Image 1 (cartoon, rainbow, N blue to C red):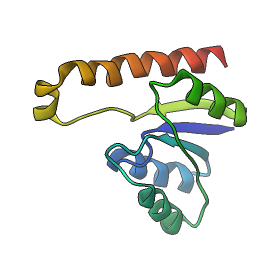
Image 2: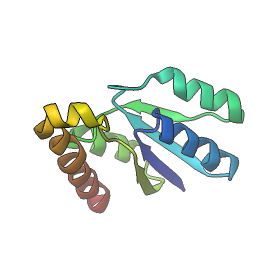
Image 3: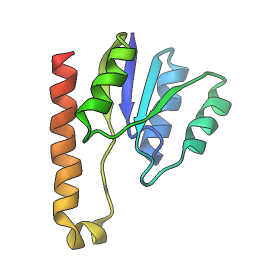
Image 4: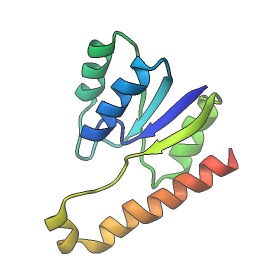
Length: 115
């Protein structure tokens, strides 16, 4: 069984990955790297000595999600950290934040339920 961690290359995501991996869980990461870096996943691998399956994918893309979940049929659970979180920017661009954080989460839930 694997746990899907969306936004897994972010600050909270990487700390969660370390705990999951050290707890014996298998993880699959999906991140669009809009405000993170694949280097964070490499750091997690170095810290834990375990490999991480990581895909560049966006929770707003149903196609991305469905393809990656089909490639990893052992995903049974999901932790969603794929959100935009800058307070000042959220005031300037509320619709972008609503779209990513709410619509993206609904897309993720739809795909997880379907699969």
